[in-house]
Structure formats: C-alpha cells, structure tokens
Amino acid sequence: MRKLSGYVEMAASEYLQETGKAELNAHWIAEFFQDNGVQDDYPRQDLIAFYALVQKALTIKSERARKQTLLQLDKAIRPISKTH
Image (tube, rainbow, N blue to C red):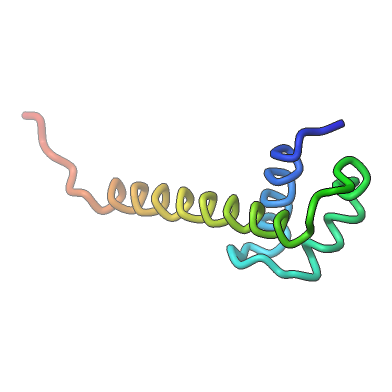
C-alpha cells in the first residue's frame, strides 16, 4: 500500500503535467481519488481533506516553480561582469 503522502504528490504532479494549473479541479481530483486506489487503500480518507492536501502540494510546487523561473530570469538579464 502506498503512503497517503505518495498519493498526494502523485496527484499534484499529474495534475500539473496535465493542466499546467495550480488551482485544483474538483472533478479531476474526485476521479483520481477513485481511479488510482486512494479510496481503496484509505477507505476512511475524506475526499475533501484529500483535495485540501493536494491543493496545498500544488501551491507549494507552483511557488517553487515561480521562484525558480524568477531566478533563471535574473541570471539571464544580469549584466555579465568583466574579469579583466
């Protein structure tokens, strides 16, 4: 049985790959919850609570990606200093 945190990370990663959005779609997560075995492995897990966990993971992933993009842009536009 996979850990719940593994399902959360898998859902967040798949959702970002499929949609590119950081705002989780309720229908998508309900299908994931049922089709990927979360419901079978964790029969007491509430879908609403799972949604919140995945949304939190999406927010974190999105923020990391934004920071990484800003860092790369900063490096690209920073003037090259001469060492001579």
